[in-house]
Length: 134
Image 1 (spheres, rainbow, N blue to C red):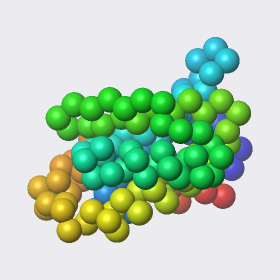
Image 2 (cartoon, rainbow, N blue to C red; image 1 turned 180 degrees about the vertical axis):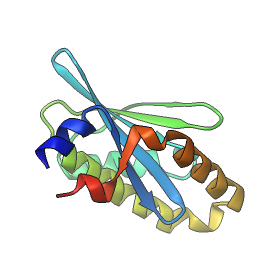
Image 3 (cartoon, rainbow, N blue to C red; image 1 turned 45 degrees about the horizontal axis):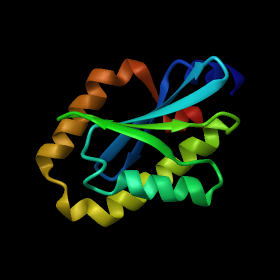
Image 4 (tube, one colour; image 1 turned 90 degrees about the vertical axis):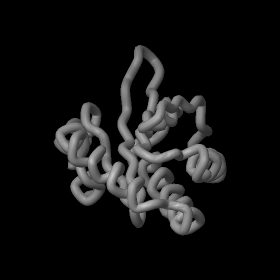
């Protein structure tokens, strides 16, 4: 597990919930640890940003610091200095599942295809959650 934790410092962890997926990664900048969650779906519109923010606060991890989006990708940014990366990943996964359960009837097959394409194109930049967990 120690080797994989070192590996995930540079790679993201891919989360799946139904047809949704997201990649969680960390970057260390001087004295600050930033966590980035890349979402190849409209995460604000589907409620993932709000669900994640609430779950992070409930878990005592922090909150969503900012959100950036373009036509194909949303990036949620968290300041997670002093937080266990595994805890952040677990919260992000739980929030993704809640979002899927709330929004699955609004998700088109085109969006699911787009998510699959994103995962295929970026697969060298993440590990599946099963490889991340001990």
